[in-house]
Amino acid sequence: MSKIIEKEEVAPNIHRVVFDAPKIARKVKPGQFVIVIPDEFGERTPFTVADWDSERGTITIFFLEVGVSTMKLAKMGPGDCVHTLVGPLGKPTKIEKFGTVVLGGGCYGLGAIYPLARAFKEAGNKVIVVTEGRTRYVLFNLKRLQEVADEMIITTSDGSLGIKGHAHDAVRMLVERGEKIDHVHFVGCTYMMMTGSKTTKELNIPIVVSLAALMVDGTGMCGCCRVIVGGETKFACVDGPDFDGHLVDWEIVAARAGAYVPEENLAYQFYKMREDDTSHAKCECQEEVQ
Image (cartoon, rainbow, N blue to C red; front, top):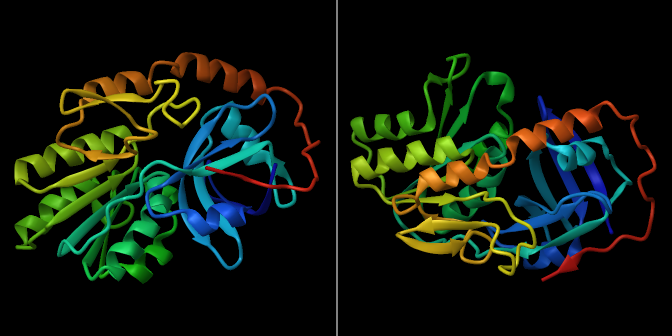
């Protein structure tokens, strides 16, 4: 088991959790993820590591409360222990000096792109961060992103903050103003990454996307997270999560992402009506390292 050190709701239904996980904190690299099981009946859910402190021995994740397992995690607080915390998993993001790098984040991706922005900046790149949200109230982590970015562009669908539009609109705007973009990396919902890939393909700009495919074991054994990239079957957990967005079969990604939505909604409503279980374990906690 692993203990929660800090927990807060940073936006409606979006939560930040800091775990005591010294072994993972020493080994994790930008782009990697962990799998969390909130209790013995919970699902194995992957979360991108949004930050870490190797000296303090902690890692940070952000997550959106959408199903039963994330609902259980959202109800926990400092001192509570999750049943399992495994990581770091997946291949680290390829960090090198490209020139001008645009990082797009939406939803949980606003947390996930922070270590990428920091790493690309340290590698000598000009880093432009683009954030996306339906409205200003779902945006978070903006101050931290601003600290590591050379420029930050905020977009909202309703125009309540920043530019009215989406992350891919900001990329097109940058090109139109004469910015030479050498590399793009998007982390967020399927629609955001798909439209970003379509736009950058039209503009002939390389893009990497971080695919949050459905997973079970996270080690390449079950094949649940398979995606089609460049006509070949890949496993998001071990071959990714980063892939060339221009080669991803987005129709299959979208179909698989929505495969269990009706069942997830039913389960969520059922558990939501149950009495809150406040008997989270207070224990000697430890995390499992791959």
